[in-house]
Length: 395
Image (cartoon, rainbow, N blue to C red; front, top):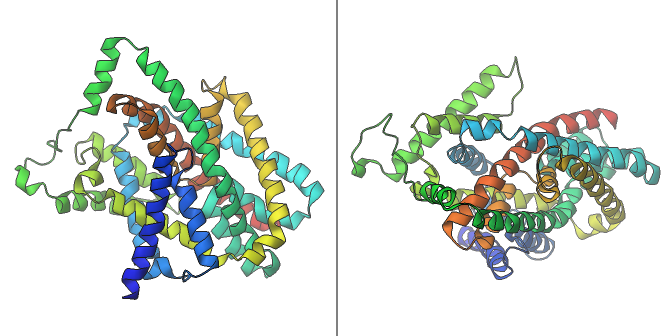
């Protein structure tokens, strides 16, 4: 019975987050509400192993991550992916702005070890937080072990609503832009939204009764497996994060006709996998305590303020040269706080809430989603690992 109770608690928290997001028209993101519920729950009566008991442990999350990243590749083309170099530059330079203020003003206010332990999670989300926590334990700096994860918790509480607000501003602008388009361009968007794919006819000529959910999952899993094998094979020569390879291979498989668009959605399992990923991410909040938070809250708040200010200055200065609004540029930079799948969920929620029809929603997704995803990969999947590795040596 405890397994069902644990599952019920996890899904209840996620459900409440979705309902609040819907009621507030995405001004309060679902991930923000769910994160707060998990944190309060872990501090009170919810068992700290509730996510693992509900079968959303590390093994399941690894499967979820690979499959969902391949699926995301089916939503983009290689051309679109390559066109997002501006988002990559904005996101990385936004991190430079964060590092500049925190390592100058921050070290003037606090001691060096505090700043070095706290800043990587501010520029790389959960990945950097876990790397720093492990490194601090290995070096015996136990009094700072709670700082990286606590930083991740606090900046998420700020980053989720701020990113949602920025995307809503950009979404409103894009809706107006779409409505001012000529009828011919609107029709092309409508055609894309109603496109039901070619059912992978380049590879398989199977009757409809054989194109089952399991058939789709086998194909997605094969692409994810190939991505992992390639990442392992090239690792001695070039260290490319396997998550990036999953995305790229998903794009290629879709372009070749091996995978259909929205593959996991058509298999009926996409939401389930996303819930598994979210549950695992929020399970990391279980290692924090109110006492730990109370002792380091001042340092965290000041460093978050400095980091976000530096990011805002860099994004605002670079927005016009890179042909973005400052809202979109700042949102791209903020992806370093959380990465995938939060960037995907926030963008999807805002697009759905701001659009009045499917055509407008597709227009918003086409203009915001690639930038957010690629920005998140550049920061969380690549830059965060590099920064955390460097900062561990600076302790």
